[in-house]
Length: 487
Image (cartoon, rainbow, N blue to C red):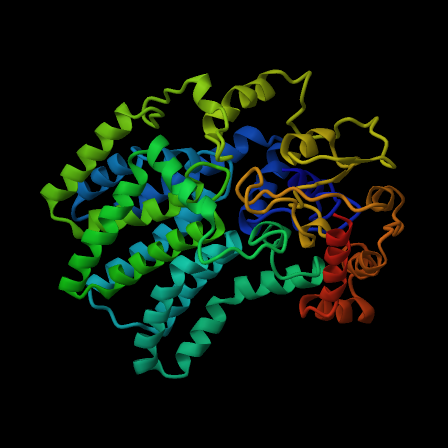
């Protein structure tokens, strides 16, 4: 929301207004929220309205796809509202609802046309690649879901279209290609800064699966006893039925679901309980409703609804207890329950926090930099003038590329604290490189060319290439060695 606020007020797509760093993971969602924020001048209810609109869109798409059997739609809704993960992150203000809508349109289109045995035309292939491309722009890791199905469609298309299938893919991929090009030129990097900060963050390379991943799955089973069991049933029963009926469209959709689950285990999950399971759950529901006989479908819907209704954190009744909002030793948090009282206070206590359109805290000294980890409310509430050093590195390009304190056991499942280098605070305050370590000083000089220098210069284009191809990585390694020798 701070990036949205800065963008609407003419500071560019920035979090700290003095530097270009992509502190958001979801460009498409960010642009949609920016449009609404610019029109209505309010960030809370308009964002939630967009969430509800996208979630309603899923129902409308399903209604059209299953118009011959509307009981499927009712079963789908019953199963969806039973999942705490799906309900929480369909109404959270995050990008999940748009991710869900794009996936629903993609797979409903795939399922319907496959059932009718339609030939893969150039137009159809282009449309499917386009949907997946928008999915990527909304959240890059959704390529794991779309990839297997797109590969299958491409192989089918190649048999009849030949090289025309390449043209269809090239046209459909334009949104993703355009965003990657923009991000690389504007920010200096093709991926969001959050990816560099979190994925195997802090130069930590875990074994095949991060140990935190097991805790993330266990937490979901404890707090949300519907989501993962439904996904497991879809994977097992759906795979068996799909193979039996030769429904390779469904089978490859399930391969994408499995890839998302493996990805969650690989990266150690997230600090938001169940967030990474919302999309796999949606896909599981679509597969179960599409493939199961009516009696089985309704049995699953009834069981899910009853368990969701009686669960300790029911998404149907909205029941929660303050003691359940505490973060446990795992660092995983029930974000809905934890933030609900605070969010309501924000909405109804305007004297304490202005969440509307306009400038806030104009008395902030722009020459002062503040080190702050939990940057959400802080960043938006303090307005654009305060320079903040995010020591979780989500919005800090330098710290995102430095080693974390304790990547194996650090708080927050991917939110990894960094130690602020000596001289960095002064550097941010003055706009001059005052970092004392020689190797890191040299690296930061190059980074400043990307984040604060003029965008269209030959020197910057050369530096972008060299930075992204690892030309300057040895300086980070020297800095790490220096830290290790001091400790």
